[in-house]
Image (tube, rainbow, N blue to C red; front, side, top):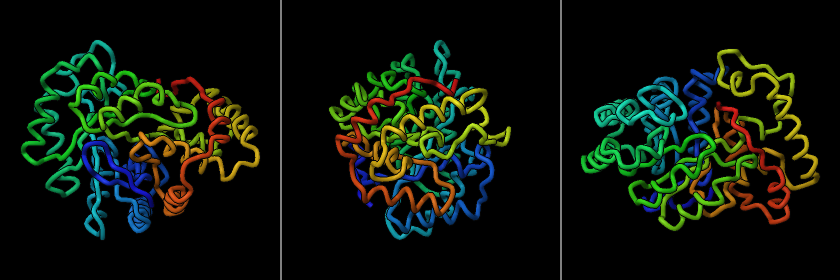
Length: 322
């Protein structure tokens, strides 16, 4: 496993992190806690030292599983979590004030709940789970973050940027008020490369690349006949004709890649760790098999220019979260 520095925090984190949304269980069905625990243990054995979870993942269930497992870690683990929007709207909507989403007392209270779930005294990275640039000048989030740091409840702070809106956090990154940003970055959505990545590097702000497989599309495993439980998140994400659209784009991508070295999933994951601006990519992993496949990518290194040139042709502007 290779390691990178998470911006100004000085945290040396595994470039393949552990995305812990799926193990929360509420919106990702079919998994089991025993397998999730085995996957977490295996990830740590293979050098993963960064886990990204959230209070909203299974209403704290993901945090509790993470807290249970990290007590057995033989090396320093870095844990990131998130404060869910109080109004439970993902992504943040324009025109809704921060008092309805992240009031000061609420941020503090959620952080205390996450500390309890994780059974730790300090959270390495606390993040706001959504972001609206209209809140930039608001006192609530600034004061909460500052006081949580001063009290030793959190070591670093950041935000998870709204879906497909990397430029919405440019002012925030430039301000120096946060230590990291989390952003959608994958073969289909390469937009953070234009403005966000250069600004993050300039300001020494860490970058966490989320959704590296586009919710499974870039593994190549989704077909037009793939069926999801109606209660699962992907039943919504890939509703209607969307599976057919995915198959069309993925088939074209695979055709262009031809005999390129590695599976589609491997190439997709390597793509997200190719830019030096990315501190860690955080694929969701619910099984030992996927942990082993994903962590192996760290040994492969950055993609070559020929492969990158092919991937550049497959940018796909969409927003399936809406």
